[in-house]
Image (cartoon, rainbow, N blue to C red; front, side):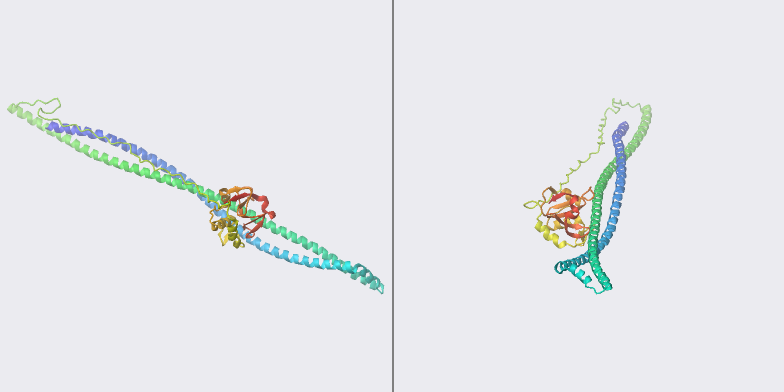
Length: 435
Protein backbone atom coordinates (compact mmCIF):
# COMPACT_ATOMS: atom_id res chain seq x y z
CA UNK A 1 0.00 0.00 0.00
CA UNK A 2 2.87 2.34 0.75
CA UNK A 3 4.42 1.62 -2.65
CA UNK A 4 1.09 2.47 -4.25
CA UNK A 5 1.00 5.79 -2.40
CA UNK A 6 4.55 6.57 -3.50
CA UNK A 7 3.74 5.70 -7.11
CA UNK A 8 0.73 7.98 -7.05
CA UNK A 9 2.79 10.79 -5.54
CA UNK A 10 5.51 10.37 -8.16
CA UNK A 11 2.92 10.25 -10.92
CA UNK A 12 1.30 13.40 -9.52
CA UNK A 13 4.63 15.18 -9.57
CA UNK A 14 5.16 14.23 -13.21
CA UNK A 15 1.58 15.29 -14.06
CA UNK A 16 1.96 18.67 -12.37
CA UNK A 17 5.22 19.22 -14.23
CA UNK A 18 3.59 18.40 -17.58
CA UNK A 19 0.72 20.80 -16.85
CA UNK A 20 2.76 23.70 -15.53
CA UNK A 21 5.19 23.87 -18.48
CA UNK A 22 2.62 25.18 -21.05
CA UNK A 23 1.28 27.64 -18.48
CA UNK A 24 4.76 29.03 -17.86
CA UNK A 25 5.34 29.11 -21.62
CA UNK A 26 2.05 30.99 -22.08
CA UNK A 27 3.03 33.45 -19.34
CA UNK A 28 6.32 34.10 -21.12
CA UNK A 29 4.45 34.66 -24.40
CA UNK A 30 2.10 37.12 -22.71
CA UNK A 31 5.08 38.93 -21.17
CA UNK A 32 6.53 39.35 -24.67
CA UNK A 33 3.21 40.74 -25.91
CA UNK A 34 3.12 43.17 -22.97
CA UNK A 35 6.60 44.41 -23.86
CA UNK A 36 5.52 44.86 -27.47
CA UNK A 37 2.46 46.83 -26.31
CA UNK A 38 4.69 49.01 -24.10
CA UNK A 39 6.88 49.76 -27.11
CA UNK A 40 3.80 50.55 -29.23
CA UNK A 41 2.31 52.80 -26.52
CA UNK A 42 5.61 54.69 -26.10
CA UNK A 43 5.82 55.19 -29.87
CA UNK A 44 2.23 56.48 -30.03
CA UNK A 45 2.81 58.82 -27.11
CA UNK A 46 5.96 60.15 -28.78
CA UNK A 47 4.05 60.83 -31.99
CA UNK A 48 1.22 62.41 -30.01
CA UNK A 49 3.69 64.74 -28.28
CA UNK A 50 5.19 65.74 -31.62
CA UNK A 51 1.79 66.40 -33.22
CA UNK A 52 0.62 68.25 -30.11
CA UNK A 53 3.67 70.48 -30.44
CA UNK A 54 2.78 71.13 -34.09
CA UNK A 55 -0.79 71.93 -33.05
CA UNK A 56 0.45 74.43 -30.46
CA UNK A 57 2.60 76.06 -33.17
CA UNK A 58 -0.45 76.39 -35.43
CA UNK A 59 -2.52 77.81 -32.59
CA UNK A 60 0.27 80.30 -31.89
CA UNK A 61 0.23 81.31 -35.56
CA UNK A 62 -3.54 81.75 -35.35
CA UNK A 63 -3.11 84.00 -32.31
CA UNK A 64 -0.46 86.03 -34.13
CA UNK A 65 -2.74 86.37 -37.14
CA UNK A 66 -5.58 87.50 -34.90
CA UNK A 67 -3.25 90.09 -33.36
CA UNK A 68 -2.42 91.32 -36.86
CA UNK A 69 -6.14 91.48 -37.59
CA UNK A 70 -6.71 93.65 -34.53
CA UNK A 71 -3.96 95.98 -35.71
CA UNK A 72 -5.53 96.05 -39.17
CA UNK A 73 -8.91 96.95 -37.67
CA UNK A 74 -7.33 99.93 -35.95
CA UNK A 75 -5.79 100.98 -39.27
CA UNK A 76 -9.15 100.52 -40.96
CA UNK A 77 -10.87 102.68 -38.35
CA UNK A 78 -8.23 105.40 -38.76
CA UNK A 79 -8.45 105.16 -42.55
CA UNK A 80 -12.23 105.36 -42.40
CA UNK A 81 -11.94 108.57 -40.38
CA UNK A 82 -9.54 109.96 -42.99
CA UNK A 83 -11.89 108.90 -45.75
CA UNK A 84 -14.76 110.72 -44.08
CA UNK A 85 -12.63 113.85 -43.86
CA UNK A 86 -11.66 113.45 -47.52
CA UNK A 87 -15.30 113.08 -48.44
CA UNK A 88 -16.10 116.29 -46.55
CA UNK A 89 -13.21 118.08 -48.28
CA UNK A 90 -14.39 116.82 -51.66
CA UNK A 91 -17.93 118.00 -50.90
CA UNK A 92 -16.65 121.47 -49.93
CA UNK A 93 -14.45 121.78 -53.02
CA UNK A 94 -17.24 120.56 -55.25
CA UNK A 95 -19.57 123.22 -53.84
CA UNK A 96 -16.95 125.95 -54.47
CA UNK A 97 -16.37 124.69 -57.99
CA UNK A 98 -20.08 124.74 -58.72
CA UNK A 99 -20.33 128.26 -57.33
CA UNK A 100 -17.42 129.46 -59.49
CA UNK A 101 -18.88 127.73 -62.51
CA UNK A 102 -22.04 129.77 -62.06
CA UNK A 103 -20.01 132.97 -61.61
CA UNK A 104 -17.85 132.33 -64.68
CA UNK A 105 -20.88 131.41 -66.75
CA UNK A 106 -22.56 134.67 -65.68
CA UNK A 107 -19.51 136.72 -66.61
CA UNK A 108 -19.21 135.01 -69.98
CA UNK A 109 -22.87 135.64 -70.65
CA UNK A 110 -22.45 139.33 -69.66
CA UNK A 111 -19.56 139.81 -72.07
CA UNK A 112 -21.47 138.09 -74.84
CA UNK A 113 -24.69 140.08 -74.34
CA UNK A 114 -23.46 143.57 -73.36
CA UNK A 115 -20.05 143.56 -75.01
CA UNK A 116 -18.11 144.19 -71.78
CA UNK A 117 -14.83 144.17 -73.69
CA UNK A 118 -16.08 147.21 -75.68
CA UNK A 119 -17.28 148.81 -72.46
CA UNK A 120 -13.81 148.35 -70.95
CA UNK A 121 -12.32 150.24 -73.93
CA UNK A 122 -14.87 153.09 -73.75
CA UNK A 123 -14.26 153.29 -70.00
CA UNK A 124 -10.56 153.94 -70.61
CA UNK A 125 -11.00 156.37 -73.57
CA UNK A 126 -13.54 158.51 -71.71
CA UNK A 127 -10.92 159.38 -69.13
CA UNK A 128 -10.41 163.17 -68.73
CA UNK A 129 -6.70 163.10 -67.94
CA UNK A 130 -3.65 160.90 -68.36
CA UNK A 131 -3.63 160.04 -64.70
CA UNK A 132 -7.27 159.10 -64.98
CA UNK A 133 -6.47 156.85 -67.98
CA UNK A 134 -3.72 155.11 -66.01
CA UNK A 135 -6.06 154.64 -63.09
CA UNK A 136 -8.81 153.22 -65.28
CA UNK A 137 -6.37 150.84 -67.02
CA UNK A 138 -5.30 149.61 -63.59
CA UNK A 139 -8.94 148.95 -62.61
CA UNK A 140 -9.60 147.03 -65.82
CA UNK A 141 -6.38 145.04 -65.34
CA UNK A 142 -7.43 144.04 -61.84
CA UNK A 143 -10.85 142.96 -63.09
CA UNK A 144 -9.31 140.82 -65.86
CA UNK A 145 -6.69 139.43 -63.44
CA UNK A 146 -9.41 138.54 -60.96
CA UNK A 147 -11.28 136.60 -63.61
CA UNK A 148 -8.05 134.87 -64.64
CA UNK A 149 -7.34 133.96 -60.98
CA UNK A 150 -10.86 132.65 -60.62
CA UNK A 151 -10.35 130.32 -63.55
CA UNK A 152 -6.97 129.17 -62.25
CA UNK A 153 -8.42 128.44 -58.79
CA UNK A 154 -11.22 126.52 -60.43
CA UNK A 155 -8.70 124.30 -62.24
CA UNK A 156 -6.66 123.81 -59.05
CA UNK A 157 -9.68 122.80 -57.00
CA UNK A 158 -10.82 120.31 -59.62
CA UNK A 159 -7.35 118.78 -59.58
CA UNK A 160 -7.47 118.62 -55.76
CA UNK A 161 -10.80 116.78 -55.90
CA UNK A 162 -9.31 114.23 -58.30
CA UNK A 163 -6.24 113.74 -56.07
CA UNK A 164 -8.33 113.26 -52.94
CA UNK A 165 -10.58 110.77 -54.73
CA UNK A 166 -7.50 108.83 -55.85
CA UNK A 167 -6.16 108.82 -52.28
CA UNK A 168 -9.47 107.58 -50.97
CA UNK A 169 -9.65 104.76 -53.52
CA UNK A 170 -6.04 103.80 -52.78
CA UNK A 171 -6.83 103.42 -49.07
CA UNK A 172 -9.90 101.36 -49.90
CA UNK A 173 -7.83 99.04 -52.10
CA UNK A 174 -5.12 98.64 -49.46
CA UNK A 175 -7.66 97.75 -46.79
CA UNK A 176 -9.45 95.27 -48.99
CA UNK A 177 -6.16 93.58 -49.88
CA UNK A 178 -4.99 93.34 -46.26
CA UNK A 179 -8.34 92.05 -45.07
CA UNK A 180 -8.35 89.45 -47.83
CA UNK A 181 -4.84 88.29 -46.98
CA UNK A 182 -5.71 87.94 -43.31
CA UNK A 183 -8.83 85.90 -44.08
CA UNK A 184 -6.87 83.69 -46.47
CA UNK A 185 -4.17 83.11 -43.85
CA UNK A 186 -6.74 82.40 -41.18
CA UNK A 187 -8.48 79.90 -43.44
CA UNK A 188 -5.22 78.01 -44.01
CA UNK A 189 -4.37 78.01 -40.31
CA UNK A 190 -7.81 76.82 -39.27
CA UNK A 191 -7.54 73.98 -41.79
CA UNK A 192 -4.12 73.01 -40.43
CA UNK A 193 -5.50 73.14 -36.91
CA UNK A 194 -8.39 70.82 -37.75
CA UNK A 195 -6.03 68.39 -39.50
CA UNK A 196 -3.68 68.33 -36.49
CA UNK A 197 -6.62 67.86 -34.10
CA UNK A 198 -7.76 64.86 -36.15
CA UNK A 199 -4.28 63.31 -35.89
CA UNK A 200 -4.11 64.00 -32.15
CA UNK A 201 -7.52 62.40 -31.63
CA UNK A 202 -6.55 59.36 -33.71
CA UNK A 203 -3.29 58.92 -31.80
CA UNK A 204 -5.18 59.22 -28.51
CA UNK A 205 -7.63 56.55 -29.68
CA UNK A 206 -4.78 54.27 -30.82
CA UNK A 207 -2.99 54.80 -27.51
CA UNK A 208 -6.15 53.99 -25.57
CA UNK A 209 -6.61 50.82 -27.65
CA UNK A 210 -2.99 49.80 -27.09
CA UNK A 211 -3.29 50.45 -23.35
CA UNK A 212 -6.51 48.43 -23.32
CA UNK A 213 -4.72 45.54 -25.03
CA UNK A 214 -1.90 45.85 -22.51
CA UNK A 215 -4.42 45.67 -19.66
CA UNK A 216 -5.89 42.54 -21.22
CA UNK A 217 -2.46 40.95 -21.51
CA UNK A 218 -1.66 41.93 -17.93
CA UNK A 219 -4.86 40.22 -16.81
CA UNK A 220 -3.88 37.10 -18.77
CA UNK A 221 -0.41 37.21 -17.21
CA UNK A 222 -1.89 37.55 -13.72
CA UNK A 223 -4.17 34.58 -14.38
CA UNK A 224 -1.25 32.53 -15.69
CA UNK A 225 0.86 33.45 -12.64
CA UNK A 226 -2.07 32.48 -10.43
CA UNK A 227 -2.25 29.08 -12.12
CA UNK A 228 1.53 28.65 -11.85
CA UNK A 229 1.34 29.45 -8.14
CA UNK A 230 -1.49 26.94 -7.70
CA UNK A 231 0.38 24.24 -9.57
CA UNK A 232 3.60 25.05 -7.71
CA UNK A 233 1.77 24.68 -4.42
CA UNK A 234 0.30 21.40 -5.58
CA UNK A 235 3.75 20.25 -6.71
CA UNK A 236 5.18 21.06 -3.31
CA UNK A 237 2.37 19.11 -1.66
CA UNK A 238 3.07 16.22 -4.05
CA UNK A 239 6.78 16.33 -3.18
CA UNK A 240 5.92 16.17 0.51
CA UNK A 241 3.68 13.19 -0.22
CA UNK A 242 6.55 11.45 -2.06
CA UNK A 243 8.88 12.05 0.85
CA UNK A 244 6.26 10.79 3.29
CA UNK A 245 5.56 7.73 1.14
CA UNK A 246 9.28 6.98 0.82
CA UNK A 247 9.78 7.21 4.56
CA UNK A 248 6.74 5.04 5.23
CA UNK A 249 7.90 2.46 2.69
CA UNK A 250 11.34 2.28 4.33
CA UNK A 251 9.83 1.81 7.76
CA UNK A 252 7.52 -0.90 6.45
CA UNK A 253 10.41 -2.66 4.69
CA UNK A 254 12.48 -2.64 7.90
CA UNK A 255 9.54 -3.91 9.89
CA UNK A 256 8.80 -6.66 7.36
CA UNK A 257 12.43 -7.80 7.34
CA UNK A 258 12.35 -8.20 11.10
CA UNK A 259 9.10 -10.15 11.05
CA UNK A 260 10.34 -12.45 8.24
CA UNK A 261 13.36 -13.40 10.18
CA UNK A 262 11.29 -14.17 13.24
CA UNK A 263 8.17 -15.80 11.78
CA UNK A 264 9.30 -16.93 8.29
CA UNK A 265 6.11 -15.47 6.83
CA UNK A 266 5.50 -16.02 3.11
CA UNK A 267 6.65 -13.20 0.89
CA UNK A 268 4.20 -11.50 -1.38
CA UNK A 269 5.34 -11.43 -4.98
CA UNK A 270 4.93 -8.07 -6.61
CA UNK A 271 3.38 -7.82 -10.01
CA UNK A 272 5.25 -6.30 -12.90
CA UNK A 273 3.61 -2.94 -12.25
CA UNK A 274 5.21 -2.66 -8.82
CA UNK A 275 2.06 -3.35 -6.69
CA UNK A 276 1.02 -6.42 -4.72
CA UNK A 277 -0.87 -9.16 -6.48
CA UNK A 278 -4.16 -8.25 -4.93
CA UNK A 279 -3.78 -4.50 -5.59
CA UNK A 280 -5.25 -2.61 -8.50
CA UNK A 281 -2.92 0.03 -9.95
CA UNK A 282 -4.25 3.61 -9.79
CA UNK A 283 -5.35 5.06 -13.12
CA UNK A 284 -2.99 7.62 -14.62
CA UNK A 285 -4.75 11.03 -14.96
CA UNK A 286 -4.51 12.68 -18.35
CA UNK A 287 -3.17 16.26 -17.98
CA UNK A 288 -5.25 19.00 -19.55
CA UNK A 289 -3.04 21.60 -21.21
CA UNK A 290 -4.42 25.15 -21.30
CA UNK A 291 -4.43 26.90 -24.64
CA UNK A 292 -1.45 29.32 -24.46
CA UNK A 293 -2.85 31.57 -27.18
CA UNK A 294 -5.39 34.14 -25.91
CA UNK A 295 -8.52 34.43 -27.95
CA UNK A 296 -8.91 38.00 -29.24
CA UNK A 297 -12.43 39.26 -29.84
CA UNK A 298 -13.23 40.20 -33.39
CA UNK A 299 -12.75 43.95 -33.86
CA UNK A 300 -15.93 45.94 -34.22
CA UNK A 301 -16.61 46.87 -37.84
CA UNK A 302 -15.57 50.43 -38.64
CA UNK A 303 -18.34 52.42 -40.24
CA UNK A 304 -17.19 54.87 -42.89
CA UNK A 305 -17.87 58.53 -42.20
CA UNK A 306 -20.97 59.70 -44.05
CA UNK A 307 -20.28 62.06 -46.90
CA UNK A 308 -21.49 65.64 -46.34
CA UNK A 309 -24.91 66.26 -47.82
CA UNK A 310 -25.23 69.41 -49.86
CA UNK A 311 -28.46 71.38 -49.53
CA UNK A 312 -30.82 70.85 -52.43
CA UNK A 313 -31.21 74.13 -54.38
CA UNK A 314 -34.73 75.45 -54.83
CA UNK A 315 -36.63 74.97 -58.07
CA UNK A 316 -35.07 77.01 -60.88
CA UNK A 317 -31.56 76.52 -59.48
CA UNK A 318 -29.72 78.65 -56.96
CA UNK A 319 -30.81 80.57 -53.91
CA UNK A 320 -33.70 82.98 -54.38
CA UNK A 321 -32.30 86.49 -54.82
CA UNK A 322 -35.52 88.07 -53.58
CA UNK A 323 -35.21 86.13 -50.31
CA UNK A 324 -31.51 86.92 -49.93
CA UNK A 325 -32.00 90.59 -50.81
CA UNK A 326 -34.73 90.98 -48.21
CA UNK A 327 -32.29 89.68 -45.60
CA UNK A 328 -29.15 91.46 -46.84
CA UNK A 329 -30.47 94.99 -47.50
CA UNK A 330 -31.35 95.81 -43.86
CA UNK A 331 -27.81 94.84 -42.87
CA UNK A 332 -26.25 97.67 -44.88
CA UNK A 333 -24.08 99.92 -42.75
CA UNK A 334 -23.05 97.23 -40.26
CA UNK A 335 -19.28 97.72 -39.82
CA UNK A 336 -16.62 95.37 -41.07
CA UNK A 337 -15.23 93.15 -38.28
CA UNK A 338 -12.54 90.61 -39.03
CA UNK A 339 -13.86 87.22 -37.86
CA UNK A 340 -17.32 88.73 -37.33
CA UNK A 341 -20.41 86.58 -37.89
CA UNK A 342 -23.13 88.63 -36.16
CA UNK A 343 -24.89 91.95 -36.58
CA UNK A 344 -22.25 93.48 -34.32
CA UNK A 345 -19.90 93.21 -37.29
CA UNK A 346 -19.20 90.95 -40.28
CA UNK A 347 -16.21 89.93 -42.31
CA UNK A 348 -16.96 89.00 -45.93
CA UNK A 349 -17.63 85.27 -45.46
CA UNK A 350 -19.34 85.83 -42.10
CA UNK A 351 -21.84 88.08 -43.89
CA UNK A 352 -22.61 85.61 -46.71
CA UNK A 353 -22.93 82.71 -44.26
CA UNK A 354 -25.30 84.76 -42.08
CA UNK A 355 -27.54 85.80 -44.97
CA UNK A 356 -27.73 82.30 -46.45
CA UNK A 357 -28.40 80.78 -43.03
CA UNK A 358 -31.36 83.14 -42.54
CA UNK A 359 -32.60 81.96 -45.93
CA UNK A 360 -32.43 78.34 -44.73
CA UNK A 361 -29.24 77.42 -46.61
CA UNK A 362 -26.18 76.16 -44.75
CA UNK A 363 -22.80 77.10 -46.24
CA UNK A 364 -19.23 76.81 -44.84
CA UNK A 365 -17.63 79.54 -42.75
CA UNK A 366 -14.69 80.91 -44.76
CA UNK A 367 -14.56 82.19 -48.35
CA UNK A 368 -12.28 79.44 -49.70
CA UNK A 369 -14.51 76.71 -48.23
CA UNK A 370 -17.63 78.43 -49.59
CA UNK A 371 -16.06 78.41 -53.03
CA UNK A 372 -15.01 74.75 -52.78
CA UNK A 373 -18.47 73.57 -51.70
CA UNK A 374 -20.46 75.59 -54.26
CA UNK A 375 -21.60 74.57 -57.73
CA UNK A 376 -19.49 76.60 -60.16
CA UNK A 377 -21.43 78.56 -62.80
CA UNK A 378 -20.24 80.61 -65.78
CA UNK A 379 -23.47 82.58 -66.27
CA UNK A 380 -24.21 84.01 -62.83
CA UNK A 381 -27.64 85.04 -61.69
CA UNK A 382 -28.49 87.32 -58.76
CA UNK A 383 -28.22 85.31 -55.57
CA UNK A 384 -25.06 83.45 -56.62
CA UNK A 385 -21.84 84.06 -54.73
CA UNK A 386 -18.98 85.89 -56.45
CA UNK A 387 -15.45 85.03 -55.32
CA UNK A 388 -12.24 87.08 -55.49
CA UNK A 389 -8.52 86.54 -54.98
CA UNK A 390 -6.58 89.75 -54.39
CA UNK A 391 -3.31 87.95 -53.64
CA UNK A 392 -3.45 85.56 -56.61
CA UNK A 393 -3.50 82.57 -54.25
CA UNK A 394 -6.38 81.55 -51.99
CA UNK A 395 -9.92 82.87 -52.28
CA UNK A 396 -9.88 85.84 -49.93
CA UNK A 397 -13.14 87.72 -50.57
CA UNK A 398 -16.74 86.85 -51.32
CA UNK A 399 -20.01 88.69 -51.90
CA UNK A 400 -23.54 88.05 -53.14
CA UNK A 401 -23.96 88.84 -56.83
CA UNK A 402 -26.73 91.41 -57.35
CA UNK A 403 -26.80 91.58 -61.15
CA UNK A 404 -25.02 93.79 -63.67
CA UNK A 405 -21.62 94.67 -62.26
CA UNK A 406 -22.64 94.93 -58.60
CA UNK A 407 -22.55 92.73 -55.53
CA UNK A 408 -23.32 93.19 -51.85
CA UNK A 409 -20.80 92.19 -49.24
CA UNK A 410 -18.88 93.28 -46.18
CA UNK A 411 -15.88 95.30 -47.32
CA UNK A 412 -13.21 96.53 -44.92
CA UNK A 413 -13.66 100.11 -46.11
CA UNK A 414 -17.42 100.36 -46.07
CA UNK A 415 -18.84 97.54 -44.00
CA UNK A 416 -21.92 95.91 -45.51
CA UNK A 417 -22.65 97.74 -48.74
CA UNK A 418 -23.19 97.32 -52.47
CA UNK A 419 -20.01 97.56 -54.54
CA UNK A 420 -19.33 97.97 -58.23
CA UNK A 421 -16.75 95.82 -60.00
CA UNK A 422 -15.55 98.71 -62.13
CA UNK A 423 -13.78 100.57 -59.33
CA UNK A 424 -11.61 97.76 -58.00
CA UNK A 425 -12.91 94.20 -57.95
CA UNK A 426 -13.21 93.26 -61.63
CA UNK A 427 -9.55 92.25 -62.02
CA UNK A 428 -9.70 89.95 -58.98
CA UNK A 429 -12.78 87.85 -59.86
CA UNK A 430 -12.11 84.09 -59.70
CA UNK A 431 -15.60 82.85 -60.45
CA UNK A 432 -19.17 82.34 -59.30
CA UNK A 433 -20.70 79.66 -57.10
CA UNK A 434 -24.30 78.59 -56.60
CA UNK A 435 -26.09 77.04 -53.62
